[in-house]
Image (cartoon, rainbow, N blue to C red; front, side):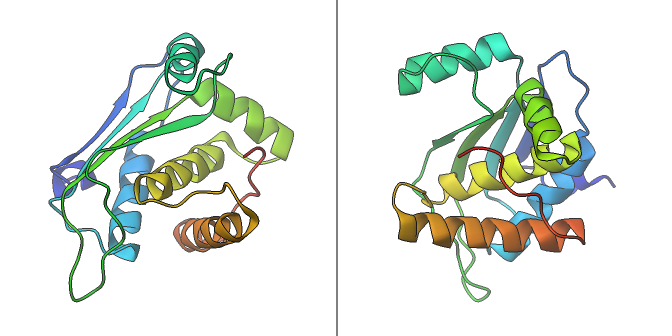
Length: 163
Protein backbone atom coordinates (compact mmCIF):
# COMPACT_ATOMS: atom_id res chain seq x y z
CA UNK A 1 0.00 0.00 0.00
CA UNK A 2 1.37 3.40 -0.94
CA UNK A 3 1.31 6.41 1.37
CA UNK A 4 -1.22 7.98 -1.02
CA UNK A 5 -3.56 5.05 -0.27
CA UNK A 6 -3.03 5.61 3.46
CA UNK A 7 -4.31 9.20 3.04
CA UNK A 8 -7.47 8.62 1.00
CA UNK A 9 -8.75 12.17 1.55
CA UNK A 10 -5.55 13.84 0.33
CA UNK A 11 -4.81 14.64 -3.30
CA UNK A 12 -1.42 15.75 -4.57
CA UNK A 13 -1.55 16.72 -8.23
CA UNK A 14 1.29 17.88 -10.43
CA UNK A 15 -0.20 20.03 -13.16
CA UNK A 16 3.13 21.74 -13.87
CA UNK A 17 5.67 20.89 -16.54
CA UNK A 18 8.29 20.45 -13.80
CA UNK A 19 8.80 16.98 -12.31
CA UNK A 20 7.70 16.83 -8.65
CA UNK A 21 8.30 14.04 -6.16
CA UNK A 22 4.66 13.62 -5.16
CA UNK A 23 5.46 10.56 -3.00
CA UNK A 24 7.72 12.72 -0.84
CA UNK A 25 4.97 15.33 -0.53
CA UNK A 26 2.53 12.59 0.58
CA UNK A 27 5.05 11.44 3.21
CA UNK A 28 5.40 15.01 4.43
CA UNK A 29 1.63 15.39 4.63
CA UNK A 30 1.42 12.18 6.65
CA UNK A 31 4.08 13.59 9.01
CA UNK A 32 2.23 16.91 9.32
CA UNK A 33 -1.11 15.19 9.96
CA UNK A 34 0.47 13.16 12.78
CA UNK A 35 2.42 16.05 14.32
CA UNK A 36 -0.48 18.50 14.14
CA UNK A 37 -3.06 15.94 15.26
CA UNK A 38 -5.19 16.00 12.14
CA UNK A 39 -7.53 13.04 11.66
CA UNK A 40 -6.81 10.66 8.77
CA UNK A 41 -10.19 11.67 7.33
CA UNK A 42 -9.12 15.32 7.04
CA UNK A 43 -9.37 16.50 3.44
CA UNK A 44 -6.48 18.33 1.75
CA UNK A 45 -5.66 19.13 -1.85
CA UNK A 46 -2.18 20.09 -3.04
CA UNK A 47 -1.69 21.23 -6.63
CA UNK A 48 1.60 22.10 -8.33
CA UNK A 49 1.26 24.59 -11.17
CA UNK A 50 3.44 26.49 -13.61
CA UNK A 51 4.24 30.21 -13.20
CA UNK A 52 1.42 31.39 -15.50
CA UNK A 53 -1.46 29.88 -13.54
CA UNK A 54 0.23 30.82 -10.24
CA UNK A 55 0.59 34.42 -11.39
CA UNK A 56 -3.12 34.50 -12.24
CA UNK A 57 -4.06 33.13 -8.80
CA UNK A 58 -1.72 35.65 -7.16
CA UNK A 59 -3.32 38.49 -9.10
CA UNK A 60 -6.91 37.28 -8.59
CA UNK A 61 -6.64 36.60 -4.84
CA UNK A 62 -3.92 38.96 -3.59
CA UNK A 63 -3.98 41.66 -6.29
CA UNK A 64 -0.21 41.18 -6.63
CA UNK A 65 1.63 40.73 -9.95
CA UNK A 66 3.96 37.85 -10.73
CA UNK A 67 3.95 34.22 -9.67
CA UNK A 68 4.49 33.40 -6.01
CA UNK A 69 5.81 30.25 -4.37
CA UNK A 70 2.78 29.04 -2.38
CA UNK A 71 -0.83 30.02 -1.83
CA UNK A 72 -3.25 28.56 0.69
CA UNK A 73 -7.03 28.46 0.50
CA UNK A 74 -8.55 27.36 3.83
CA UNK A 75 -11.99 25.79 3.89
CA UNK A 76 -13.31 24.87 7.37
CA UNK A 77 -11.17 27.21 9.48
CA UNK A 78 -9.46 24.26 11.15
CA UNK A 79 -6.84 24.45 13.90
CA UNK A 80 -4.42 21.77 15.10
CA UNK A 81 -5.98 19.09 17.28
CA UNK A 82 -4.61 17.15 20.22
CA UNK A 83 -3.55 13.53 20.59
CA UNK A 84 -6.79 12.89 22.47
CA UNK A 85 -8.97 14.80 20.04
CA UNK A 86 -7.61 15.08 16.48
CA UNK A 87 -9.11 17.77 14.28
CA UNK A 88 -11.22 16.62 11.35
CA UNK A 89 -12.74 18.43 8.38
CA UNK A 90 -11.84 20.02 5.07
CA UNK A 91 -8.46 21.66 5.55
CA UNK A 92 -8.41 23.30 2.11
CA UNK A 93 -6.07 23.70 -0.83
CA UNK A 94 -2.36 24.46 -1.14
CA UNK A 95 -1.02 25.56 -4.53
CA UNK A 96 2.73 25.30 -5.11
CA UNK A 97 4.84 26.61 -7.98
CA UNK A 98 7.85 24.30 -8.51
CA UNK A 99 9.60 26.80 -10.84
CA UNK A 100 9.54 29.53 -8.17
CA UNK A 101 10.56 26.93 -5.57
CA UNK A 102 13.58 25.94 -7.70
CA UNK A 103 14.65 29.59 -8.02
CA UNK A 104 14.33 30.09 -4.26
CA UNK A 105 16.23 26.87 -3.53
CA UNK A 106 19.12 28.02 -5.73
CA UNK A 107 19.13 31.41 -3.98
CA UNK A 108 19.04 29.72 -0.58
CA UNK A 109 21.69 27.13 -1.41
CA UNK A 110 19.54 24.04 -0.82
CA UNK A 111 17.70 21.38 -2.80
CA UNK A 112 14.45 22.13 -4.63
CA UNK A 113 12.82 19.14 -2.91
CA UNK A 114 13.59 20.72 0.47
CA UNK A 115 12.15 24.04 -0.70
CA UNK A 116 8.99 22.28 -1.86
CA UNK A 117 8.73 20.62 1.57
CA UNK A 118 9.21 23.98 3.28
CA UNK A 119 6.53 25.60 1.12
CA UNK A 120 4.04 22.78 1.67
CA UNK A 121 4.60 22.95 5.43
CA UNK A 122 4.16 26.73 5.28
CA UNK A 123 0.97 26.37 3.27
CA UNK A 124 -0.54 23.78 5.63
CA UNK A 125 0.23 26.01 8.62
CA UNK A 126 -1.63 28.85 6.90
CA UNK A 127 -4.60 26.51 6.41
CA UNK A 128 -4.55 25.93 10.17
CA UNK A 129 -4.74 29.66 10.91
CA UNK A 130 -1.07 30.48 11.41
CA UNK A 131 0.16 33.73 9.93
CA UNK A 132 3.21 35.99 9.92
CA UNK A 133 1.74 39.47 9.76
CA UNK A 134 3.28 40.66 13.03
CA UNK A 135 6.57 39.72 14.75
CA UNK A 136 5.02 37.52 17.48
CA UNK A 137 2.85 35.57 15.02
CA UNK A 138 5.80 35.23 12.66
CA UNK A 139 7.99 33.83 15.43
CA UNK A 140 5.32 31.30 16.40
CA UNK A 141 4.66 30.16 12.84
CA UNK A 142 8.26 30.00 11.67
CA UNK A 143 9.46 28.22 14.83
CA UNK A 144 6.78 25.55 14.37
CA UNK A 145 7.53 25.33 10.64
CA UNK A 146 11.23 24.81 11.36
CA UNK A 147 10.52 22.17 14.02
CA UNK A 148 8.10 20.22 11.80
CA UNK A 149 10.35 20.33 8.75
CA UNK A 150 13.53 19.45 10.65
CA UNK A 151 11.79 16.42 12.17
CA UNK A 152 10.64 15.31 8.71
CA UNK A 153 13.96 15.88 6.94
CA UNK A 154 16.19 14.49 9.68
CA UNK A 155 18.51 17.48 9.30
CA UNK A 156 18.10 21.24 9.83
CA UNK A 157 15.33 22.74 7.75
CA UNK A 158 16.36 25.30 5.14
CA UNK A 159 15.76 28.90 6.05
CA UNK A 160 12.82 30.47 4.25
CA UNK A 161 14.13 32.48 1.29
CA UNK A 162 11.15 34.86 1.23
CA UNK A 163 8.10 35.51 3.32
